[in-house]
Image 1 (cartoon, helix red, strand yellow):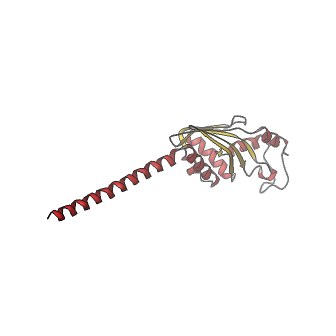
Image 2: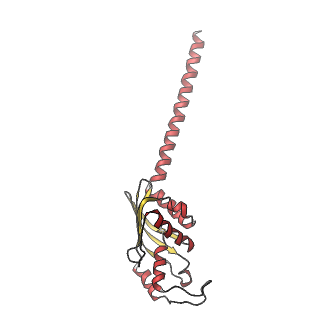
Image 3: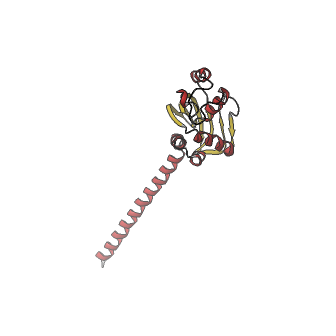
Amino acid sequence: MHSSTRAVLTRSLTSAAIILTVLAGLLRFTIGAHAQATDPKSVFDGFHAAVNAHDVDAALAFFADDGVVQFPNQPPPNVFRGKTEIRAWLQGDADQHIQVKTEQVKVAGDTMTWIAKVDVDDVRPLGITIEGPAEAVIQGGKIKSFTFTLSDATLAKLQAAPAQPPALPRTGALPDLTWMLVLAGLGIFSVGLAFRYRGHW
């Protein structure tokens, strides 16, 4: 009887140890998943992936409800506030088949900075890649603010570009340079960058 009791007790302790091990593993998984979903770099990577996939809903989900996107050295509209306006910006990027590359990515607390290189339909025929520094503030897994500034070199290229290059797809013409600059502002992410966002961003 004593041996039987000891065997039952051993099995109970073993089962309890297994349960505790499983629970500890689940807890670590939950914490890890939460950190992955909310840390700035993960949000940054997810946002840019969505922008480059032209998935407007997925990209928009990374923004806070009161998020702000701005392009300081570009003509109006150069500020987008709240999800309705930000959706319009992202949709414009998607319609332009935006593609964003990021370089020199740095994280300092909840602030990220990087160099964005953006390609969009309206300047692809000119061989121009839109470039400039970008910054995003990411809190609680959401983008609170996103800023993209055209580099001086990009501005010079856009200003020097011909207003109506020949043989452009579909229309055969390019919008005037002012509209080009607006579209350039819409082109990041972006995400990315654009934030552009693009970005983009």
